[in-house]
Image 1 (cartoon, rainbow, N blue to C red):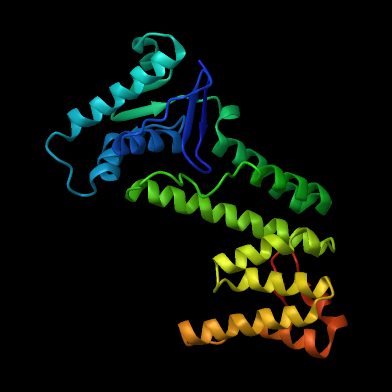
Image 2 (cartoon, rainbow, N blue to C red; image 1 turned 120 degrees about the vertical axis):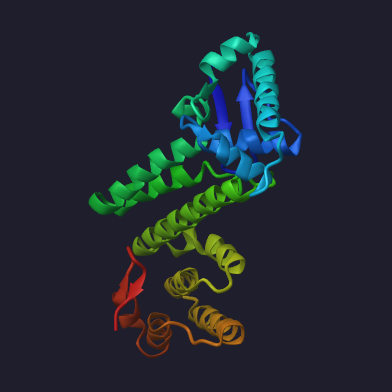
Length: 271
């Protein structure tokens, strides 16, 4: 009874090639929480907090039981089995909560982490080209922000924020490897988009400066620094970090030395 679960973008739960994701907001939250924690028990208290915050109604237990029952019936119909089979093998009641059993090969978040482990290992021990392939494979599973179409409560919001942060960190690692390999044109468009979405993110802007510089677009590298500095001063009342300022100064005064100072693996810049 295979079920495909997609959380890296809009929530999609496919049984027998049919989308069984409900339309009702609360049911969607329940299914999203089960999907995010696929193959791990989710306590009823976590469902309560996700659905109703710190003030669950007196009917919370009965209402959650109804939501679970509705999900089981929808899955049973899609799989052409009875609800008892679903409750025994797919959406299972466990002491204190529930668990959604999913083949890890059909769970995009599990696949992402498996590929990410390969990428991180390759980054430490193998040629950069191999690590690039693994990072690209892992990131290709993302169709948008995690649970993008779910009105997340406090529990899912933490999970989604962590997942999205992991995606951004992995993207930075991939970009650093591409720059180390001298492939600025492979990442320039993506970097410009990321920098626009994260206007105060120094590391992304530093990578964008390096990419422009490697591509022979020195003026745009310097413009990137000045635009970032203006925003940081205006919004935070601070100056850019010393490493970013050193990079800017070397791009102006000593271009040949600039790239030698960069540790691509950590995107640090040594004085």
